[in-house]
Length: 129
Image (cartoon, rainbow, N blue to C red):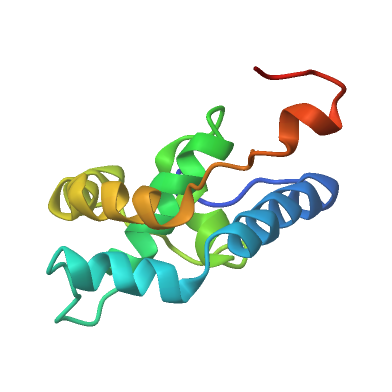
């Protein structure tokens, strides 16, 4: 049986992967993803494994798991059980192209905010002006 694209993560590695994904989901909510897709008119009309919502998560997770091929990143995002088939690499690449960059730009603009404020420098003992 072909093992390509199936999860081969150890139990310990799976725990760390799920921790990273949980952290990602705390920073970026499903609502923010939905809003970014709506703002860019990229709502999924068909029901398949490779919806725009899933592909945004896959693209974001690719930044967290740079050492993994796209199929394993997809499996981690979907939390696919060992032995469950995943889409082929080319289908994932086409879905990523279909998504485009616009929803990711919109998501970035809605999530990323400056953390510093007027008082930040004075709290660190640095005088301004």
